[in-house]
Image (cartoon, rainbow, N blue to C red):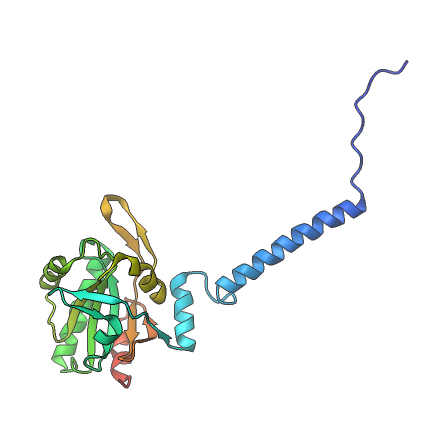
Length: 221
């Protein structure tokens, strides 16, 4: 009598292997197609660089969200941009920031000084928008403006009137904001050149303020 033995597993047939391979290949193709689509046909792998590529090809209308200034006055963003027919260089900050926003503040101070020295503040203006409307109410904006030495004719700061609009605003400009410890945020930064018509026409590295200024000054309102 032969000892008991476990049955040997049946070999996987060629048909089964082909089915498995085909299913895996289909999943891979779908994944690559999705990645190709969300990265702008492979041109970009970050939200900001994706937005930069899109803006180079065609200017993008920005959302007409309600903003509030340091005096508590409210105005739709496009109306604010159109009121004096100037090209605007725009950045995003929050007033409690002690890191990247401080660097942006220094850069804007330098650009403000150059605009005033060259008498160009009637053609180009600087605008900072807070993406932290919960904390950045008019009083916080006023304190920040004073600390940064903002001259109203050349540089102003706004916040959003409602928290619900923050996502739409950040998405329009390709800004990523991630909550950090102690109520702070991690975020990317750039200089956004916006026309009086409310269109985002170019995105420039924040380390190139001179280029941003020269580009804005050569634009027609």
